[in-house]
Image (cartoon, rainbow, N blue to C red; front, side, top):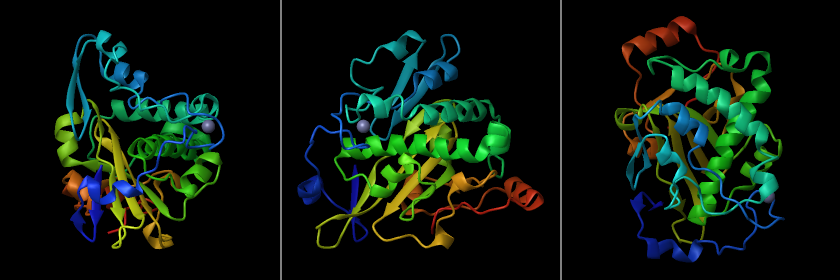
Length: 285
Ligand SMILES: [Zn+2]
């Protein structure tokens, strides 16, 4: 976890007193005991990305991993595929099944895309007429992923994230955007990548004031940002409200943390202009 305070990074002992103790409850329903761990990387993705005995590159900011052949997927000796147990069985399975189904269709679509030089993703193509509901469920899939990371990092899960998973259609203090990041694309365009968990603490070190996290499948990622203050509507155009949300370009992961987008290349800018997407789903900057 990367922790920032007033623009500089904080050593782990500077915020250790803010970390939650594990109460053994599911972070989503807060009722039943946490008996299951969510997959960090879905088996279906790993299998889809790896045809035959190819090498698949995947990892997070701490470790770069190679998986050789499909038999490698089954071995999870070091807990690299699953998060620690932080959810109950019903939440991790039945309650989130619509999220998984929406994600599978998205995953098929993005792993078949030949290029990231596109102005945005087309969710009407992915989901057809039911795109509105399916896209919300896709965003909830990512919400569940980010919630599991918060539980792993022992930071509080925002109430807005839990309400969103419960069926709310927006999060007034959080923003989700579709992204592509040059440094991640170079290494993981045929793999999967989990970025660092970035958190901010208040000047007096009394509480967490914000989170930024991203996760990628191939070249395409989703960036989640939470702020203790409500985010103004004009800075919070959520990708999951639009049939063709634009893709936000970043150079590095540090830029993703800061929210510093770069201009897309000329071709993409031309396509954006030509297609005139109906929205702007950019992160705040
Ligand atoms: Zn639960």
